Image (cartoon, rainbow, N blue to C red; front, side, top):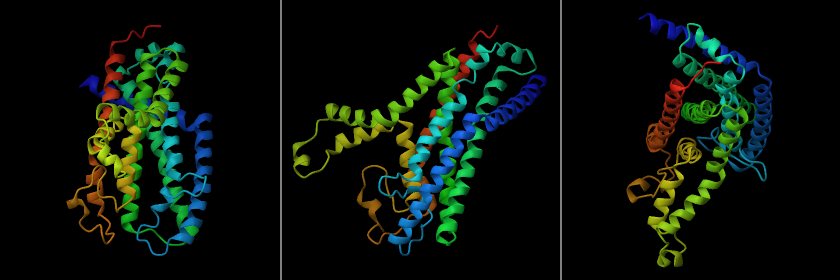
Length: 320
């Protein structure tokens, strides 16, 4: 009982210390200001397009997250870049930085256990990102209300809130990966480059590579190609391979949550088209159910990466 109480107290101390350090760090403040500036510009441009192109839409506010204009990407695009980069920036030197400063053994000599230290660093960084994402979420909602003057409906707020929660889970994936590499590599630069390289691989290269691998394993059928269609077996394998990327999982969840007319994230069957002819949107529960496998995949990836890092950290030598 004594050890459990001490570990709990140590967890709170480490988490609050990490939260304070991150919120006051220059790199985090600069990145947050840049993203806020991009959010203001993106939402303003999206508001002009929405005024000109949308007449009556029960999900008007959701378009502020997904609408792009010309060469300016949507707010969702900037968010998909911001979340992994800032997550990596917060955690890539969490453990190896303590090693290099010769402070890890001093910390663990206090009534703070290794598990409390690791959990505290992860939760402190995740809470920092959660605060930043909530601010951005409120900023988009407030700017949308200011620019179009129409309050969002309850279903819109609920969908936007689910989107916020999923984004925090997505941030947890890259935090756990950066924390793992911070444990594996003593050099902070190596950990940062390895994590950023893996993110770029999954974000840019893997979607293309998945399609090429699928075509090699399941060659396209010329009969479908003559009709301008993709071979079903090739399409299914490509989708399965692409879902190994957290970025793909996050993108599919966003499509299901922010677009109520989405009825499937894979091959569409006739039973899923019922009500689609009239453009009937799905209720929030049905949209979450469609995206539930992807949400579970993001949660499982975060837990798996953290557990691997936890096991490795428990076995490491921490003496100065």
